[in-house]
Image (cartoon, rainbow, N blue to C red; front, side, top):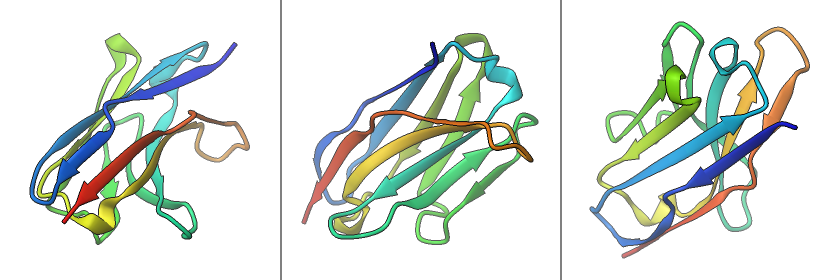
Length: 117
């Protein structure tokens, strides 16, 4: 059974930091591209950051320079370090695991991040 479990969300003030974690089980983690998405209130889910099996990263322009994605294959985990948080970063953050070029993809249940001004 595949599980992606996010943690680390919470309520912070603008300018503060949070570190999200996503622990995967039931998959060959090192074969999966890992992405973080978020869905703000009344908004569509959007890609925030991704990291390939080779460690290549990509970021949404709105978070570049503030967020850092990383992975530790030995721990079947992916992380999102979020600095200089802004109120517009508020939302539910989801972890996604996918095999590029296929329809194989899994989602976590999400973790809430709330940034107050």
